[in-house]
Image 1 (cartoon, rainbow, N blue to C red):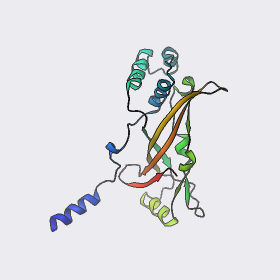
Image 2: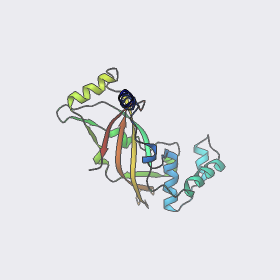
Image 3: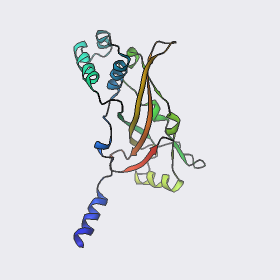
Image 4: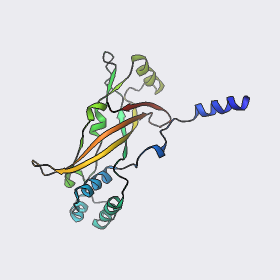
Amino acid sequence: MKKIILSLILILSLPTYVKASDLPPKLGSEQVIFLTYKLAKETPDFAEWAAIDSNRSAKELERLFKITAERTDLSRFHRDLELALYGYDAKTEEVPLGEVKAAFLASPLLKIAGVEVHIDNADDFANWKLEPKEYQKIVSDNSNEKRYNFVSTLNVKGVNKTILRDLDNKLVLNLSWDKLYIYTKDKSKLLAEIDAE
Protein backbone atom coordinates (compact mmCIF):
# COMPACT_ATOMS: atom_id res chain seq x y z
CA MET A 1 0.00 0.00 0.00
CA LYS A 2 2.84 2.40 0.87
CA LYS A 3 4.45 1.72 -2.51
CA ILE A 4 1.20 2.61 -4.31
CA ILE A 5 0.85 5.86 -2.33
CA LEU A 6 4.48 6.80 -2.97
CA SER A 7 4.05 6.04 -6.68
CA LEU A 8 0.98 8.26 -6.85
CA ILE A 9 2.81 11.10 -5.09
CA LEU A 10 5.72 10.73 -7.51
CA ILE A 11 3.41 10.72 -10.55
CA LEU A 12 1.51 13.78 -9.30
CA SER A 13 4.74 15.68 -8.66
CA LEU A 14 6.12 15.13 -12.16
CA PRO A 15 5.88 17.96 -14.74
CA THR A 16 2.69 17.95 -16.80
CA TYR A 17 3.36 17.89 -20.54
CA VAL A 18 1.49 17.03 -23.66
CA LYS A 19 3.50 14.07 -24.92
CA ALA A 20 5.81 14.87 -27.80
CA SER A 21 4.41 11.82 -29.57
CA ASP A 22 0.94 13.41 -29.43
CA LEU A 23 2.10 16.47 -31.33
CA PRO A 24 2.81 16.82 -35.04
CA PRO A 25 6.35 17.97 -36.01
CA LYS A 26 7.66 21.28 -34.71
CA LEU A 27 8.52 23.90 -37.33
CA GLY A 28 10.47 27.13 -36.95
CA SER A 29 9.64 30.31 -38.86
CA GLU A 30 12.15 29.50 -41.60
CA GLN A 31 10.68 26.04 -42.10
CA VAL A 32 7.19 27.54 -42.35
CA ILE A 33 8.47 29.80 -45.15
CA PHE A 34 10.06 26.82 -46.91
CA LEU A 35 6.83 24.83 -46.52
CA THR A 36 4.89 27.66 -48.16
CA TYR A 37 7.17 27.55 -51.20
CA LYS A 38 6.95 23.77 -51.33
CA LEU A 39 3.14 23.89 -51.40
CA ALA A 40 3.20 26.66 -54.00
CA LYS A 41 5.55 24.48 -56.10
CA GLU A 42 7.98 27.36 -56.35
CA THR A 43 11.72 27.51 -55.78
CA PRO A 44 13.09 30.42 -53.73
CA ASP A 45 15.82 32.69 -55.07
CA PHE A 46 18.48 31.42 -52.67
CA ALA A 47 21.14 33.91 -53.78
CA GLU A 48 18.80 36.84 -53.09
CA TRP A 49 17.80 35.35 -49.73
CA ALA A 50 21.44 34.83 -48.74
CA ALA A 51 22.12 38.52 -49.42
CA ILE A 52 19.50 39.37 -46.78
CA ASP A 53 20.39 36.64 -44.29
CA SER A 54 24.14 37.20 -43.94
CA ASN A 55 24.46 34.15 -41.66
CA ARG A 56 23.52 31.74 -44.44
CA SER A 57 24.97 31.04 -47.87
CA ALA A 58 22.75 30.33 -50.85
CA LYS A 59 24.00 26.73 -50.78
CA GLU A 60 23.06 26.33 -47.11
CA LEU A 61 19.59 27.82 -47.65
CA GLU A 62 19.04 25.50 -50.60
CA ARG A 63 20.07 22.51 -48.47
CA LEU A 64 17.64 23.50 -45.70
CA PHE A 65 14.85 24.07 -48.22
CA LYS A 66 15.36 20.58 -49.68
CA ILE A 67 15.07 19.02 -46.20
CA THR A 68 11.67 20.66 -45.72
CA ALA A 69 10.57 20.03 -49.32
CA GLU A 70 11.30 16.30 -49.04
CA ARG A 71 9.23 15.81 -45.88
CA THR A 72 5.80 14.25 -46.26
CA ASP A 73 4.57 14.72 -42.67
CA LEU A 74 3.91 18.47 -42.70
CA SER A 75 0.16 18.68 -43.25
CA ARG A 76 0.06 19.38 -39.52
CA PHE A 77 2.76 20.96 -37.37
CA HIS A 78 3.19 22.86 -34.13
CA ARG A 79 5.01 25.98 -32.97
CA ASP A 80 6.35 27.09 -29.59
CA LEU A 81 5.49 30.70 -28.81
CA GLU A 82 5.76 33.04 -25.85
CA LEU A 83 2.83 34.90 -24.32
CA ALA A 84 2.79 37.77 -21.86
CA LEU A 85 0.07 37.46 -19.24
CA TYR A 86 -1.32 40.97 -19.05
CA GLY A 87 -4.45 42.91 -19.92
CA TYR A 88 -6.67 40.70 -17.77
CA ASP A 89 -10.29 41.91 -17.74
CA ALA A 90 -12.04 40.83 -14.55
CA LYS A 91 -15.45 41.70 -16.02
CA THR A 92 -15.15 39.41 -19.02
CA GLU A 93 -12.77 37.07 -17.13
CA GLU A 94 -10.39 36.95 -20.11
CA VAL A 95 -6.73 37.45 -20.90
CA PRO A 96 -6.22 38.65 -24.51
CA LEU A 97 -3.94 36.36 -26.51
CA GLY A 98 -3.16 38.69 -29.40
CA GLU A 99 0.54 37.92 -29.08
CA VAL A 100 -0.06 34.42 -30.43
CA LYS A 101 -1.06 35.74 -33.82
CA ALA A 102 1.52 38.53 -33.88
CA ALA A 103 4.44 36.26 -32.97
CA PHE A 104 3.53 33.39 -35.25
CA LEU A 105 6.04 34.10 -38.00
CA ALA A 106 9.33 35.96 -37.47
CA SER A 107 12.39 35.55 -39.66
CA PRO A 108 14.95 37.75 -41.42
CA LEU A 109 13.78 36.01 -44.61
CA LEU A 110 10.14 36.91 -44.16
CA LYS A 111 10.11 40.22 -46.04
CA ILE A 112 12.08 39.07 -49.05
CA ALA A 113 10.35 35.68 -49.16
CA GLY A 114 6.99 37.41 -49.50
CA VAL A 115 5.20 34.91 -47.26
CA GLU A 116 2.14 35.72 -45.22
CA VAL A 117 0.31 33.40 -42.84
CA HIS A 118 -3.48 33.49 -42.74
CA ILE A 119 -5.09 31.69 -39.80
CA ASP A 120 -8.73 30.95 -40.66
CA ASN A 121 -9.93 30.59 -37.07
CA ALA A 122 -7.63 33.02 -35.21
CA ASP A 123 -10.61 34.47 -33.31
CA ASP A 124 -11.10 31.11 -31.57
CA PHE A 125 -7.83 31.76 -29.75
CA ALA A 126 -8.22 35.48 -29.08
CA ASN A 127 -8.74 35.11 -25.31
CA TRP A 128 -7.96 32.83 -22.40
CA LYS A 129 -10.91 32.46 -20.02
CA LEU A 130 -9.81 32.70 -16.38
CA GLU A 131 -11.86 33.35 -13.28
CA PRO A 132 -10.38 36.12 -11.08
CA LYS A 133 -9.24 33.59 -8.46
CA GLU A 134 -7.52 31.47 -11.11
CA TYR A 135 -5.81 34.53 -12.56
CA GLN A 136 -4.57 35.71 -9.14
CA LYS A 137 -3.27 32.22 -8.33
CA ILE A 138 -1.31 31.98 -11.59
CA VAL A 139 0.16 35.45 -11.03
CA SER A 140 1.04 34.75 -7.36
CA ASP A 141 2.56 31.38 -8.29
CA ASN A 142 4.86 33.28 -10.63
CA SER A 143 6.25 35.81 -8.12
CA ASN A 144 3.37 38.26 -8.70
CA GLU A 145 4.72 39.02 -12.16
CA LYS A 146 1.70 39.93 -14.30
CA ARG A 147 3.85 40.16 -17.40
CA TYR A 148 5.28 36.71 -16.83
CA ASN A 149 5.88 34.92 -20.12
CA PHE A 150 4.15 31.67 -20.88
CA VAL A 151 5.24 29.18 -23.46
CA SER A 152 2.39 27.99 -25.62
CA THR A 153 2.54 25.04 -27.95
CA LEU A 154 0.38 25.54 -31.00
CA ASN A 155 -1.00 22.45 -32.66
CA VAL A 156 -1.90 23.35 -36.24
CA LYS A 157 -4.81 21.42 -37.69
CA GLY A 158 -3.85 21.60 -41.32
CA VAL A 159 -2.37 23.48 -44.24
CA ASN A 160 -5.09 24.23 -46.74
CA LYS A 161 -3.17 25.57 -49.73
CA THR A 162 -0.92 28.37 -50.86
CA ILE A 163 -2.37 31.10 -53.07
CA LEU A 164 -0.99 34.10 -54.91
CA ARG A 165 -2.42 37.38 -53.66
CA ASP A 166 -3.28 39.95 -56.32
CA LEU A 167 -2.39 43.15 -54.46
CA ASP A 168 1.17 42.59 -53.24
CA ASN A 169 2.03 39.32 -54.91
CA LYS A 170 2.66 37.43 -51.67
CA LEU A 171 2.31 33.73 -51.07
CA VAL A 172 -0.34 33.18 -48.42
CA LEU A 173 -0.15 30.07 -46.28
CA ASN A 174 -3.66 29.21 -45.10
CA LEU A 175 -3.84 27.43 -41.77
CA SER A 176 -6.39 26.52 -39.16
CA TRP A 177 -5.64 26.03 -35.48
CA ASP A 178 -6.65 22.93 -33.61
CA LYS A 179 -5.40 23.49 -30.07
CA LEU A 180 -3.37 25.85 -27.94
CA TYR A 181 -1.48 24.52 -24.92
CA ILE A 182 -0.37 27.13 -22.38
CA TYR A 183 2.46 26.23 -20.00
CA THR A 184 4.46 28.00 -17.36
CA LYS A 185 7.64 29.34 -18.93
CA ASP A 186 9.76 26.48 -17.62
CA LYS A 187 7.15 24.03 -18.98
CA SER A 188 6.79 22.47 -15.54
CA LYS A 189 3.01 22.86 -15.56
CA LEU A 190 0.27 22.81 -18.16
CA LEU A 191 -2.03 25.73 -17.32
CA ALA A 192 -4.65 25.43 -20.04
CA GLU A 193 -5.74 23.65 -23.19
CA ILE A 194 -7.81 25.84 -25.53
CA ASP A 195 -9.71 24.08 -28.33
CA ALA A 196 -10.99 25.58 -31.56
CA GLU A 197 -14.66 26.47 -31.25
